[in-house]
Every structure is written in structure tokens, then in C-alpha cells.
Length: 255
View (cartoon, rainbow, N blue to C red):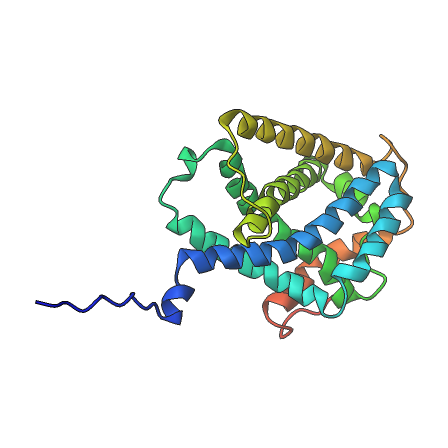
């Protein structure tokens, strides 16, 4: 009795698009695109350690990249897709978050934190420019003004935002490059994984605290206050800007 050799099972394109393999590919590619923005934005923030002038110059220089005509929607789209893919991956993960090793656990947690904080950060820094005019471009005094207004919220906010961006980026980029086959994946020992985690947490938190302190008026530098009236007006118009954005321009009239 003869038997025909079995043909390899064929997978449809739709099956691949629903697979975890494709999901990881999407996370890796969009993560690298959005990571390019995180790189230059964190570099701008770190420059604040050398004073408000250095920060403003770095911010203006790097804005030529991430606020360029085609790059801004590309970065925004990549961030949204990366977020969506991450939430799907989080839901599919067989291992509960509480049982993951601390480096991976922090990577997921910082991703979730960035999801919540980055939306508000993007609105606060970009909405005034679009709704109130070109003069409303965030600079060092924008950050300092917010810390002075509500210090017990904005100082820890900037520390947590900076640390989350740093840690998520530092752990995510090697994983993305390995997933795409650009570098060989490294299987760290328990000791090296623990050491890397402690270094990243220590460096990330220390840097974030230094950055936030650099923007706190009078502690390391005196920040010029000439644009404070703009930021006061921005705060007054925030409800109108939010309403206009949420209703796609139908309601709200920021002035």
C-alpha cells in the first residue's frame, strides 16, 4: 500500500497577519521608528542639565527632524500602531505580568505609563501651536512654568515620563533589532540581567531627576520668564482646545 507524501501545510496571508510573529514584527519596526523620536527628544531633555539656552537650542535643532512635514505623522502613526500592537501582545501573553522577570516587567510597565503620559504631553505641547499660533512653541520656560504652577504634580510627572522613556527605549531597541535579524539575540545570564536592570533603573532615575531639577526655577539655573504670559493664556484656553480637538473642530473656539 503506497502513501503519498504529505504536503507542507500552507498558511494564508490572513493567518500570518493574525500571528504573534507578525505582531512582534510590527512592534519591532514601529518601535524603532518611534524610538528615533525618543532618542532625539531625550537628548534634548538631557541638554537641560547645561542650562535653558542649551535645551532650547537642542530642542529647536531636533524639531527639524521630528516635526518635519512627513516625519511628524509618521512618528505619530508609528507610536499609535506600536501602542496597539503592544496592548494586543499584552493580552495574548501567557505569562502574567507579575511573573515576568523584573527587566521585562518594567519594560511593560513603562510602556503602559508612556501610553498614558505621552498623550497628555503631546496635547500640551502641540495643541497650542495649532490652535493659538506659532508663538506658542514650548521651550524651557514652558516646562518651568508648569512646575511652578503645580509642583507636586509636574515635578514627579517629568521624572516618571523621562525615566519611562529612557528605560523602555534602552530595553526595547536591542529586542527590536534582534527580532528583525539586524543583531544576534543575546541570552543573558541571571547575573548580567539583574545587573543590567539595576544599572538602567539607577541611570534612568538619576538622569530624570537631574533633568527635572534643571527646570526647577533657581535650583540649578534661572529660567527666563518672558513667555510666562503665553503659558498662562495657554492654560486658560486648554478646555477650549480640548473640546475643539475632541469634536474635530465643530465645538470650541480657542483665542
